[in-house]
Every structure is written in structure tokens, then in C-alpha cells.
Image (cartoon, helix red, strand yellow):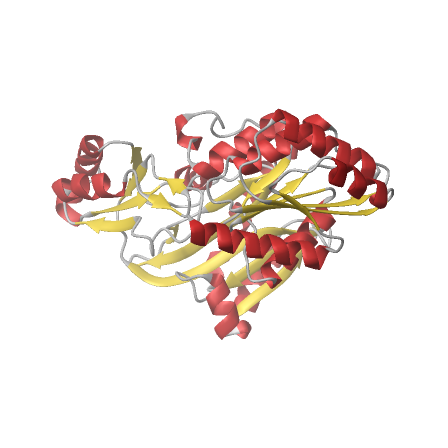
Amino acid sequence: MDLYEHQARELFDRYGVLVPEAEVVDTGSAAREAAERLGADRHGVVVKAQVKTGGRGKAGGVKKAADAAAAEITARQILGMDIKGHTVHSVMLAQPVQVEEEFYVSYVLDRAAGGFIAIASAEGGMEIEEVAEARPEAVARIPIDPSTGVTDEKAAEITAAAGLPADVAPVLRKLWSVLESEDALLVEVNPLVRTADGAIVALDGKVTLDDNARFRQARWGDPSSPAESDEHGRLEAEAAAKGLNYVKLEGEVGVIGNGAGLVMSTLDVVDGCGAKPANFLDIGGGASAQVMADGLSVVLSDPDVKSLLVNVFGGITACDAVAEGITQALGQIRLTKPMVVRLDGNNAVRGRTILEENPHPLLEQRTTMDGAAQRAAELATSTATAA
């Protein structure tokens, strides 16, 4: 689960990482009062949209206000904005700091290696992907053994590899404590800055917690709360309630598959066909009518979806059972967008026959993943044009 920036900074503060004084509000009048308490009339204040996505600055969700009155106006402008499908329900007002240097530091789970990796750069304050593409040598990637973590020696190794000042090392230790103690999958600070008075301060933060550790960790926020009522939060909460592995993406082709590897491959193929996947949805090994109905209802409720692609490889669950599930599911829900189905593997021929014997005007079949993805991309484009 991703945290809001203000929640991430609260964790940082708890573990001894310096952060600017700040308050979170959800109305313009409250923003003015908070700005007054933060001394905005003397040194201004930064107003930041609280949404669980990047690119807030480019979207106009981060602005400097000269005084408390301006903070109220700015907050009213940002509240209610849509940033990549996320509605802004609250803003954080933070005291500005005089920045001398900006750095980037993060810890992220490396599933392939079975451990974590530290990513760090002396060039913070901008998208790390842009830095890595333009100057790959400026971004250090240091593997971390989770059994030993970030010791003084490892912190020194990271700072040396990234060209960071030595006094950043203690902060790296503290950020690792955040990750380890809170069962996080990602801890990122961009930028981590040196202020004019020499302090090392986290100006922004991103933390992703491991939902698999929910049983032993108190979690931030309630998925059913108004703060989670933006499109991403609503869809992911709805899918979670149905026991589905779902992640909202930014595209227009809804994707349903069985098995995480197959779904990931499907996303890549859709992208290669000139369209963008709207989601990751893995229905797992079973494809009962209820599972299919639940998956279809979640994907269909996404207004960004223009077409659906169901890509199933029959194994333990045979394709004829999947086809029966799809047929029964279409009797339970109303299909409103074109859908392409590709069945392969165990009993694929029988599964295709079942769908042919139970035709639906919006359902098409393809026998290959490439062909199905290409058709779904074409349908998404034509549907969007017609709309």
C-alpha cells in the first residue's frame, strides 16, 4: 500500500529523519489558518497536493504561496484537481527551506535478486529516470543483503558510490530503519537536501508498505475512506474486497489473465501494439463464473477502459472451465465494452467452441496472444474515436 507524502514524512520524523514543519488540511480556510501557524506571512509556505502518484509539480499540484492569504487561494485551486486519475482531497502546507544541495536516495525491493537495492544520486530534485537515461553513471545501484541491512559500512559504500556527502550516511541508516521496521517495499526521498544551515532534510517522501505484513503492522488509512475515493483507490479497494490481485494503470485496454507472469507479458504485448494497459488483474488459477464476473465488473467500472483483453492459458484449470465461467459471468453482468478472448493450453479447442456456441455481440476470439492484443488495441482506439 502506498502512503501519502504526509504519512511518509511522519514515519521519517518518527525515525529521526529531519522534515520541514507541516500541516495537512482539506479546505481553503483551514489552509489559511495552518499557513498562519507555520509563519507564512514571514517566509511563505509550500502547498502540496496529497495524492498517491508522481508528477504533482508538473500537473500544478505543488505551489509556493507568499503569505497566508495566498495559501488559502492556492489550496482552493489545488483541492479537487485531478492528477493522473487521482482527485486531490487534501493538501499539505510545509515551511520552505533554503536549499544548498539536492540528492536522491531510495531503497526498493529487488525481487529477482531476493533482496533490496539502494539507488542513490547526487543529482536529486528531478525524476531519477531522467537522470539515469541522460547520465547513467550519476546513479549508483548498491545491492543490500536483508539479513545484514544497512550498516555503517554499507551506508558509507552507498554515499561513496553515489558521490554523496559523508554526512548523508546517518540518514541512510535511519531510512533503512523505516523500511525494515515498517515492512516497506519502497522508501524514497527526492529530494533529500542540504539546507543553508547544513542540515540534511527530507523535502519529499514516498513509502510503499507490504500488504502481506498487514497482520503485524498497523496500517495507514482506510481504503473505504473518502481520501481513497479517487478512481485508483476506488477500483483497487473494490478489487481487494473481491480477493482480486488488481493494480490500476494509466491506459485504455483492460487486461485480465491467469498468473502474474502471463499478465505481465500481456501488458508488454499490449504496449507493443501501440496501446496502453489500463490495469493488471490476475484471477489466479481458478476462473469460476463468480471470479470472472468480479474481474469483469471491476475492469468495466474503470471509465478509462475502452476495450478488454482476457488472456488465459489453461493448466490445472482447463480452458473449457474458463469459457463456462466467462459465459456465466456475461449472464450476470452487462458487457458494455468490446472484449477479446484468447484461450490456449488445456482444452483450448473445447473452450473456444463453448464461446462460439454462446455468442455475444461485443465478444471476439483470437487464437494467439499477439493477435488478441492487436485486436484489443484496435478496438480501444476505435471506441475512443467514436466517443
